[in-house]
Length: 214
Image 1 (cartoon, rainbow, N blue to C red):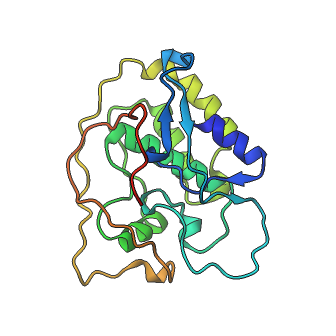
Image 2: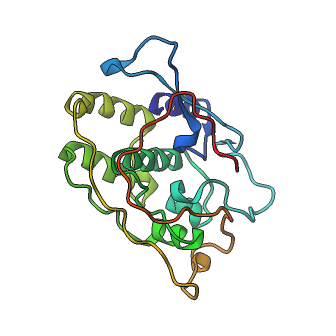
């Protein structure tokens, strides 16, 4: 996936909606590093050319709340770094079974992207955790490039082989009905419905899975 993003970014394209539903496994092609099936990044339907001039100010936040980078919530134009943040969120979810800032009302999710620090995951190699922290940095310039992330993940792959699934509880992110929303961070928030908070294990990528209806 990181390789796919690197190719897209080199062509001046930001995906803007990296999430598990948009990653498919190629069960027919040759195996990749570590004997894994190649991953295919799909659905460039909301992709954007980098540095494309905007004739009008955007009135909607485009993307899926759980995977949106802080700068998108704050109304800044999308750059390649937003895809790195989203992919790091996917990696966190694959390990923990839940996203680092998800759960509850979409407005609360957006606010947490801007204001909260990612909660550590016990039981994963420190090198992998530091990589996740760097790619989930609030400042876009602090994140790795896609090609750098790909190289680092290939280095870490051997130590992940045979690692047992993490058994962690998803934080209680439910918000009371009168809780403040993310309007202070952005006047326009997505309207997608958040899933209820629950305890989950690691989330595998499903071969041939269809993207969820939006």
